[in-house]
Length: 166
Image 1 (cartoon, rainbow, N blue to C red):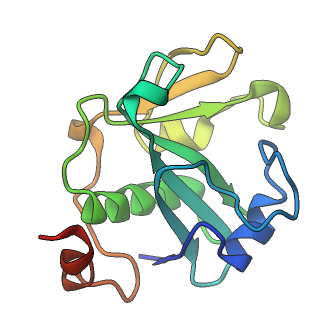
Image 2 (tube, one colour):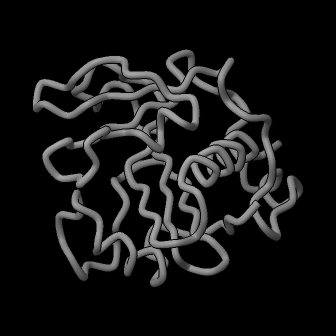
């Protein structure tokens, strides 16, 4: 596990988020959509990941209710597909009840240099599940294809039991 638990205004996460193509307000302290979220930053501070869990009634895409990977940027923290799987494992550790629709992510093919957009997600087990009305490629990871839950660096279940009321 290379990820540590961070927060929606984490300065190291913000610096990485500022260089991601979907960043709307470069320099703003917050870089995560409103609502429930998990923010992870690698110990070396070269990658950031966000899992959002928006309330279905506020979602406009057809995968309402799913977890959403709203940000992933890797600037040399390791193989992206491995980092993705570790981030999913850490997400499952914090949120053990995986939604029926699993985890989705969206890729803007016009904003990535790859001739195979979403390649790192595909290598992590995601499959192409459609296209949004805005033209983004949608990829999904079902519960059956997810890694087992694992804590982020320095994280213990007791840390979240009090917060989650478990």
